[in-house]
Amino acid sequence: MGAGQSKFPKRYHSFRRKKQSSNENITVQNSLKQEPVSSIPKFPSVNEHIDYLHQHHFLVKSIWSTNFSSPIEDTLNDGAKVLDVRCGAGTFLLELSNEYSLSEFTGIEKTKLFPSLIKPSNLNFIHANILEGLPFQQNHFDFVYLNIVEPRHTKDQWAFIMSELIRVAKPGGYIEGFDSFAGTIGPKFLKFIQRFAMLFSANGVGMGSRHHIKSILSTNSYFYSDQKEIYIGKNGGESGVLLEDHTTMFFVDIIGEAIAELNNITMDELKRDWKEVQKEFEEVKTSLEIFRMWVMKS
Image (cartoon, rainbow, N blue to C red; front, side, top):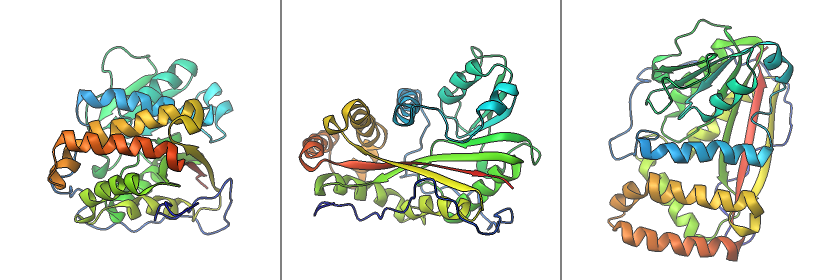
């Protein structure tokens, strides 16, 4: 990988099945609703984040050439119940609800960035906080999807969230998630990642909480994952250029002000530093490890 390799380890395996015990029983700690301190930027929270959320959907789709990896195509065509947790602007559900007219789709998000009126009749959005529990009975959905994973929650909170996803899924149904981690990176991009981690580390949350999601799901006998290494920028072709634009939106437009405040620099200085990162993308052949994981509830 070279001297500029990330300190974050590669932990994901392609299409790997593990034969271990079921993860239906997950212990949940108290104080699950506790939010990190106010210095952490709330995302998604404002209309300016909608473009980023739309782009996120199309980026993920362009990498896999499909909206999901779980084997649920036939179920969707026959009529399924689908839940998108942290649905953001609802892009994923808007596309699928038009494609699979016999299925019923529900999106959950605590910020009202999803459309409330102009949407297909088989799509419903609910304004709710997942840390308060999902407002559905157990064994209700054929497919449960988590597209946005961020290091905002503690390990105990993630354990609760994942237990809720498993609870509302039907036996034989699938839970699927997506995330990304640093692959080969240079020192300038690493500095931004470390600044990002600093926003959360003092609050008991961080990158390790995201790794915890896989550790929960992978205890199931029917766990699968697929990983792709995508070069950021021109080195990665069309997907790489889109990924560079998406990464820039996140580090500059979404969390830039919080990083600048934390490091006592101006936004102009942060943008100047980011331009150097973009040059480094091509020099180092910077990459991200993009992965999907899915598990069938037994």
